[in-house]
Structures are given as structure tokens and as C-alpha cells.
Image (cartoon, rainbow, N blue to C red; front, side):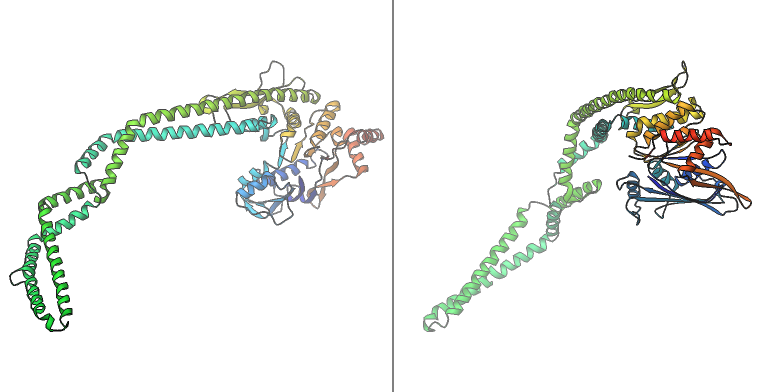
Length: 564
């Protein structure tokens, strides 16, 4: 609820602090007393366009502070969290909006003492207060809100959620299909390249690690003659006629011939010569193997160079290393294979997307049917409210129109719109264009009464909803305002004594001179003052005893708009 409103230097208001109560609060006063200034100040706090003309003459700045007391789970707090604005340090559930306006037209806005943009302020305001007046241009006059209102009235949330999920699933299926189609088109565009590259790689038949192996072979081939000469020399020195092998053998035999005379003293020498002879034998075997390897390679240096050149040339062409060529060959083969069965995958994805489309259509059609049923109930409920409000010749119509496929979306396939006709034979049209000022306010009242259970906005403000009516019609307006006040806080600016008599809280707006400036003030009326004010509203400037008696009867007979 709106707990308080502080106004400083706004038009005729110098200093004003108001504390609000639940239920129905009525504001009365003579024409020109400044009742509309209060609403202008509240609208300024709620993000309406700042006009320097609102700044009181002689003041440098106007300011308005609106304090709200809200449930902890109210949408306004979710919006603040979404904008990374920390919670207030004040009591839980408290939301304080402050708007300042300089005489130069510049304005600033704060929420719980944190600066915010005017756009965010208006977004918050949409969750806090609805102001309905004769010249209203927001709220239910905005066709974009009509679908939301109907869905809320019909409790269609589950169907809306199911339709939204079906839309997302359909969109995801179509995106998957489109990706496959794009991949197939790309593959077809490079099919010739893939086939030529694959053929070339298959002819090359690269092996993992082949470049390193060929580089080693190339190095050996470059020094083949020198290496073979070295091996031959080593072999000759070890096994030739005067080689180490023969010398060791002769030395060993010389020692063995006299070993028995040495008493075992030559045993170690003979064993060492045995080992040396074995090592020389192994060395000679290794030399033979190395020499044979040169003969077994069966390659010449030119062939190895050509192979290395081909490997490196093709690797550079594809932007890879020679060692990555085998993997590239496998990749090209896989992509060509995918191209061959790509049409099958595209066909399967197309079938899946069409199936999801059917799921969406079924969900959207169910939602449309539910909307049409809810629209009939809404129209009938509004019609019942219009007759007592002296709008019995008016007709309210909720249109649910199927959109072309290009207009479908998460919210379904419908365009929802409210239209009215105020005279028989007149085709229904937009509220703001068909109804007069007084009719607009009463239409809004009828709609709000019907839609009250679907509204999450805690505060409703009506500006002269009783304009141009009286008697039973004014009483019907008061009764409906009272019904609204059972669930929401309602503030109404009224000239009707029947409406004023139902208020739980009654404020009188007065205008007086303060020095050389006119000032507006707001007075909370006690029971006696309230009776006098309603008597004035009944009789005019000269309050008679008959008017006082009539006012007393109105007050005594009227239920009081206190929040239950």
C-alpha cells in the first residue's frame, strides 16, 4: 500500500505530508482547490514526464517522496534485484521513491536513496499504482496490456506456459534443422575440394611420424659413404690380419699355455681377455648390422628428398604439420561420408521441426479456445457492471483474433483487444476514442471491479470517476469503489456525496492565501467535519440543516470502505 506522500514546492503546495491508511480514501474540496495537484505530484513520483511548471513560484526545486509498504515478494523488489540495486536498510517491505524537479526542468529519481533512471522508475510504478482519470492514456488503454489482462482474468497461466515451452521447442528444432541445412550447403559447396584433396592424400598415404623417420634416413644417406668407410675401417681394425680380435686370441693362448705353472695367477687375466674377446665379437656384429642397414634401406637420397618435399608441400597447403596429415585424411573422408548421408539427417530434422510445430499449434489452439471462453465471461461480467453505472446502452467487447503465422510467438497466436460501443448501432472501437471523459472513468471502474482478483497492483487512484452523474448512479460508483477497497487500497477524488460517504478516510483539499501566494493544504476530517463537508457537497455554498441531515443519513447508511 501507499503509506505516505510528502510534497514540497509543487505548484500551490508548499509543504505537505500525508499518511495513508488501507481501504477507501476520499478527497473532496471545491473546484480549483488543488485536488489535481496531489495527483500530479504522485504521478511525478511515479515517473511521469517532469514539467518545470510544477515547481512552485519562487522555489528552486520541487520534490515528492512516496513511501510504499509492500510484501517481501512484491514484483518491485524483483525488479530492483534484477538491476543490481541493493535492498533498503529500512524496515522489511519498505520502498521509498523520491523525485526532484529543478526550476530548469531537470529531474532526478531515487529509490531507497539509490539513483535510478526515469525509465526504471516508470517500470516500478507499473507494479505499484494505477491512476484512472478522465484523460487517462496508460494502463488498460494500452492494447499491449489486454492479452495479459485476459490471461490473468481467465487464470490461463498454465496454458500460456505450455504454449511458450512449445514455441521454444519448435524454435530449437528449427534452429537445429537450419544448422544441418547450412552444414550440408557448405559441404556441397566444397565437395569438389574435398574429393580432390582426399584423392591426393590417399595417393600420398602419409604415415604418423613419417617426417621424422625420413629426416633421419635423409641424414644418414647424406653421409652414407663416410659412415660405411668408418664401419669398414672399424671392422678391419678389429677383425683383420693384424686386428684386435686376432691379437686378443693370441694373447689368450700364450697365457693358457703356461697357466698351470702360474698357480692360478693368470686366471683373472685369461678371464679378462675372454670378456674383451666377447665384447669385440659383439662390436663386430653391431658393425655388420649397421653396414647391412644401409644396404637394406633400398632408398636413395633423391627419393627421400622428394617424399619429404611432397609431405611438407601438402601440409602447408592445408595449414597443418606433416604429422597431422593422416588425421586430415580421415577428417576429409568423414566429411564426404557425412555429405552423402547429410540429406537424410536434414530430412529427419525437418520432420522433427514439423512435429514440434504441430505441438505448438495444438497448444496455441487450446490457449485460443480458453481465451475466447474467458473473453465471453469477461464481457458478460463487465456488462453486468455497466448498467448500474448509467452505461446500460454501452457494450464492452473482448476481441480474440487469430494472427498469421508471422505473428505467432511465445504468448500464442492471438491478438487480444478491448473495444467499446457507447451507443446502439455504433461499431465497437478503442476505449479512448469512443467514450467521453466521464464514461472513460466509469468504464475503467467497471473493468477494475471485474478484474480486481487478477490485479497485482496494490494501489488504485480514481480521478473524478463520478463526473456528470448523481443519485443512484453515483451510489453505484461508490458501491463499486468500496468493493475494490476490500482487496486494494483505493484513493478517489470525488464531487459525489454518495461516494464520499463510503470512505473510511476523508480528506478535504483547501486553498488559502499565505502572504502573497496561494497555498493548497489537505485536512483530515473528523466525523463532524466530514458530515459538514458532505452537506456542502449536497447543498453547495450555503449549507442548510436539511443538507446536514441528509449528509448524516448518507454516512449512517453507507458501508465504510475499510480493508477487510
